[in-house]
Image (cartoon, rainbow, N blue to C red; front, side, top):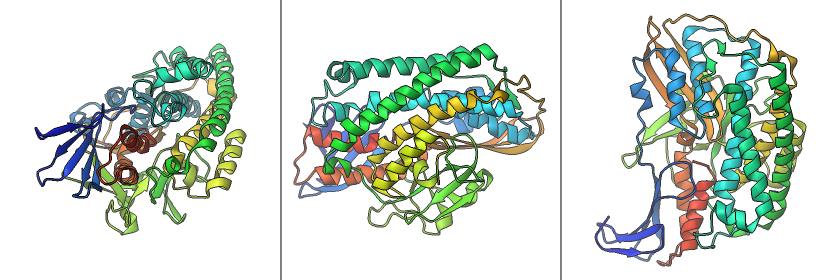
Amino acid sequence: MSAKTVEVNATGVMSHGGNGHKVINIQPVTRIEGHARITIMLDDAGNVADARLNIMSLRGFEKFIEGKPAEEVPRIVSRICGICPWMHHTASNKAVDGCFHAEVPPAAHKLRELMQVMAQINDKILHFFFLAAPDFVMGSGADYSVRNVMGIVKAAPDLARKVVKMRQAGQMMLESFAGRAIHPVVVVPGGFAKPMGEEERQGLLKAAREQLEFARYAIDFSKREIFQRMEPATADLGRITTGFLGTVKPEDGSLTLYDGVLRLMKADGSYQDFPYDEYVEILGEHVEDWSTSKFPYARSWNEGFSMDLGDPRGIYRVNTLARLNVCDRIETPLAQAELEEFRSRFGRPAQSTMLYHWARLIELVYACERVIQLLEDPEITDLHVRNEVLPRAGRGIGCVEAPRGTLIHDYSTDDNGLILRANLVVGTTHNVAPMNMSVQQAARSVISRGRVSEEALNKVEMALRCYDP
């Protein structure tokens, strides 16, 4: 950054770029699950010329798992994300199953899905109430010293107590059965490491029903106190027009977080379904010289790649809003009722970026209902949860829906079962291009003629937080 700097606020610093234009750096971006910087470039009139989301970290997992025994990789890649290790653990095991041609018993599939969906519950509670809600409960213009989860504790103590209790209960549910809430090891090639006992099932079922009651309270509270009171200018923050990608069940197009086919929907609502192993023909990966992240785009649309707000070629989004847009229905009754209300208000596909938060709570209801469905299935306590597998040469593609979007693990192994090549497309990566577009749209809507306030910069961050990056 230039030595000629002017303090804008606690998180934003304005400097003079090499061409004399002013640059605003928001660093660090607050209340996200990771590290990022937003750079806003102003023209001579003080209006936004461009804005970029800068992802500084380079993780390198694709390269350093090369040469490793494939059966070890699911334990390694769970370290990619301490927030959603279950999703990487599960997707990785599905990829290894493919490499080794492993057959997974039905009870093991149910246990895998159970763990993954329970982890979804915890993540949604964390993001909505700990990271996003302070902007709405405290107000986007509240001082940053109180615009956080501790501010919510003071402003709405009853809500805060419920949130903390349910978040802790969700973590304990995972730990009580799987031994760990983070960095799991129980999903294994060919199945699951242990069967579920009846006492464990009953204990989890009781806790799951309590979580469902909280989910119903949370969405009712949020519709009444947050979404219905949202000002139009806030509702339009980060709004862009794109396509969407998510996983659906092939038989009826219903929402699924564990297994199915991928559905790529255009902005006009038309779509194509394809199996996981065709993703390389359908999706491309673009690189920009100012970012360490890949920029996935829809290769099959034959439109190329462009993040131009007026001409967003090849751009699609993932995560909660995308999954609700692409699915035809939700198989659980309470979440289906919420989906019907959502679509009656916003249509299909809904494009407003702020609706990610509403969609996140609908998925919270679904996840709680789905956990109960799985636990009430008598097959989940079947003792046969693992088949023998042998290392061999092959290719496997594992895919699940992570909280932040469609997660793809693609491995190839040699004759000894060692990893020859790996490609990972994580949920946030799919959204890198649209996040850049939303940040630019939000910046242009709140900054003009060089007038910059702390609230304006927080609103730019709010557009980014919708994606839960």
